[in-house]
Amino acid sequence: MSKDRRIRLKEPGRIWQMRVAGLAFRNGHVLVHRAAHERFWTFPGGRAEIGETTAETLRREMKEELGVEARIDRLLWSVENFFHYEGKDWQEYGLYYLMHLPESIAFHESEIIHRIQDGKNLLEFRWSKASRSALAALPIPPSFIAEEIENLPLHTRHLVWDDGDLDLL
Image 1 (tube, helix red, strand yellow):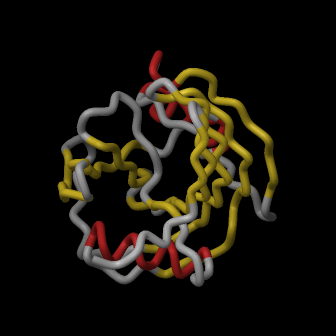
Image 2 (image 1 turned 45 degrees about the vertical axis):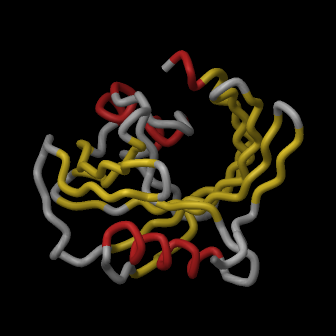
């Protein structure tokens, strides 16, 4: 078994991690995913690993989770995101890229289009309408993205954000 190279630090009651995610669009929708046991959705991606660029992280995650080659476009946001989840205080450094996925990825306006076992989590993927109201209704942290989904930044924005208690979503 190989050594875990994912970038994550743990202290009692606290976790810091680096996560890279991508926003892929099709037919006015954006791809989202979640662990089946969670109530909230996120944008597909995963934890960065030591020794890889963040674009490589996102390409690796899309290959592992969707079985496809992703084309990584520009960096939209870098986010210092704070939240409380599963009894711990999290500090996540997140990088959110615009990405392009092949047309071979299934599309449906409301149904789950893909499931995969990722470690102990069953991940579910679906397309959500790329609108403020649709993403707010999911819900999807970091929540500021719902506010900006209809008007993506032309240049990378850096934010410090606090999503509060995700257990309450």
